[in-house]
Amino acid sequence: MSKEQQKQQFYKVFANLPINFREEVILVIPGKGPITWQVAFLEVDNDTEIGAMILEKLSDLKII
Image (cartoon, rainbow, N blue to C red; front, side, top):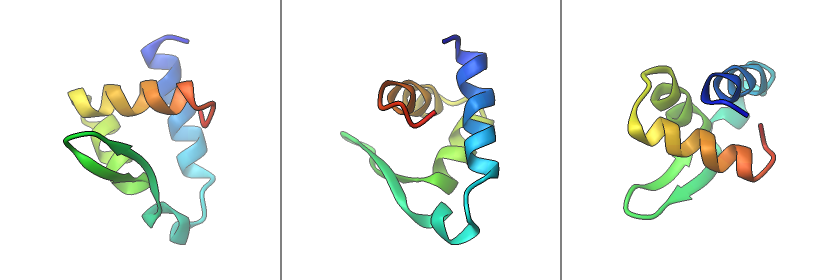
């Protein structure tokens, strides 16, 4: 799956999450700490290096 496909899939999953669930931790990145859905959205949306790592890990875990 390409980065752009991962990003679109992430947006689909995020849009369907209940608002309360968006505050839940979904990943822990060594050296960066826990990542919630809201933080993941900001990182992915801003095309950061952390955002790329988040997309890769969520794809590996079959969450997106």
